[in-house]
Image (cartoon, rainbow, N blue to C red):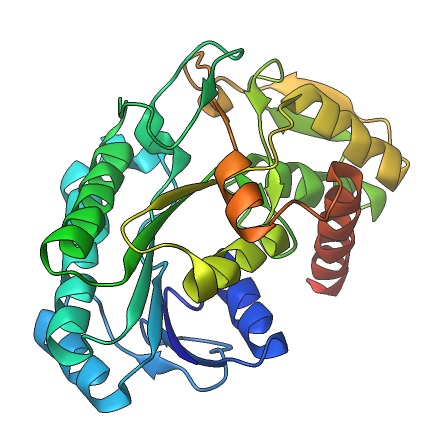
Length: 311
């Protein structure tokens, strides 16, 4: 299939392009114009340009589209709620409307987030029919995109579906995110480019991390065989304390740094839900292939190479 991928230059997007190529598909990468190192074959377009995106879809005639484009870091959504609502909400509408009008045969997978479910006790397992309870503007925008996708599937009888991924990690992630931040700091210490001090937030928080390569494989399987009108959780379903992640990275790097808690890195206490992955496992046979330690080794090696190459 010719698979259009919005947000193709992002963290998950680059891994998804590789997953599609390795499985016989022809990716059509779409993103804002790249300043440096664009992905091969980039189709420069802003999803907020509704007319321009419709023209692109009409010209390319994709067989499918995976919509990843948007703003992905949750904390700034409180300072920029309008931007998040527009890009993550209206942006999804622009993508779906362009596909409906210009390529009505195309399958579409819209990526929302586990954030749509809100916060629960850590023992509470969330299924796809659990109620939405967004707790930040990012999540509100993702709820809108989620509802809109399923509405289009039902009302217009189109092959559209939704993926709700939990936190994902892997090589190449921005250091705004906790695991990549740890890995970059530890690599600088190991290479003698920084004092042996790691600055952290709340190490008692629990997160359910899934390797981005497992997530990309789930997206590929869903665009191939997922049921139209349905939503699918994507999660490893193995919650772990952030402290454990930090300890494993330090062990991998062979360093024993001092830990300093920075108030600016501490978020209000929360309890991310544990997502059930039963639906995607039973229907498509997906399950995580990367262990947490394997993911962390790959992340650290990528960070070490990046830091070593920097001036």
